[in-house]
Amino acid sequence: MDSQPPQARVVSELNANVPLAQPGEFGPLPIGPLSVWPPVVLAPMAGVTNLPFRALCREYGAGLYVSEMITARGFLMGNRLSVLLASSDPSESPRSVQVYGSDPKDLGEMVRALVDQGVDHLDINFGCPVPKVTRSGNGSAIPVKPKLMARLVSAMVKNAGEVPVTVKMRKGIDEQLLTFLDAGRVAQEEGAAAVGLHGRTAAQLYSGEADWDAIGELKATVSIPVLGNGDIWEAWDALRMMRHTGCDGVIVGRGCLGRPWLFRELAQVFAGQEPAAPPTLGEAVDVMVRHAERLVDFFGEAIGMRQMRKWVAWYSKGFHGSAALRGRMAELQRLDQLRPLFAELDLSEPFPAKALRIGRAKGNKQQRVKLPEGFLDNRDDDSPPKGPHTLAEIEAWEQALQGG
Image (cartoon, rainbow, N blue to C red; front, top):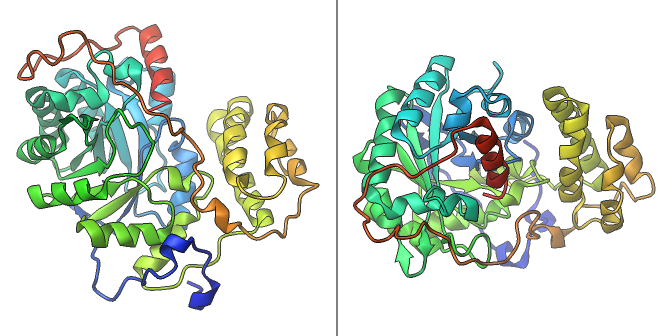
């Protein structure tokens, strides 16, 4: 890979003096039989980590790239979108799918089907903070009931065979009800190969700063690998997180939205190399077009270009004139309309350093987490909460998960 002298870094003040990885400082991330290098995982994100985006990130150097959440009941009932989003192609290896469910029977059946399809890694989501989800006792509410969580992880592990199962979760409901240490122990006891921790509570949503100390505390509590999640905006953040927490790998979420080349930078810093400069606006437009072509191939032009509208806003964030583009997003209906959007902008403009740490999705609001009435009265209860069962309920549920 090309390298640049230190003075050429496009970097925030926070990371200006972070040293590159030293030889032997970090090793591959072990997840069961998988050895992931660099120790970087593309976070499962609803409405984001479909096959087109995963393929783009893989080309830039992601170690492991996880699908968006696939609802177990929807997958088993043959819901068209669930099946499509769980799909892959022969070039995707390792193939990783995140499943979502609260019924051990459903999870077991889904896992068996995915293993038969040749999946290489399975993750379960216990971190979704969306009110519609927690209100029914699902998502980030599940670790509140460790015996229920144990049943769900066990059902996946027993049906996965040699395929590793990992768990992704948050610190807890709020600062008064933290569950991550107990949940980490449950995951380990039930055979999970690794656990990922987003260093925020469900009440925080995506606001404030991620608690990296909690990641270190979990690492000191369990013997299975721990992946840290939260505030990886620059490649240097990954090095800082691993040095600060001792975690075994990092999960990259919002920081790569509209910036798939972040994975190239991550691969380079873990290899002890200065990262290549991020793209100019014109080069970013070239990436956008590649991304749009894949979305159109995968979803069809109407849906693919409708999805591309948010991506254009994310890719162009921080460049001069980008704000004016947002008012024209509704016009973007065909692939051949994409490049002309940028005709009046300076395509030679370098990537703006101020855009490195700008959020491209979610907000800074917090919430009071909604739980079912009486949910906390018996935390030893292991009965599955009610989830969607009809196709109509599943489709409404999946729309809600777009915010998770």
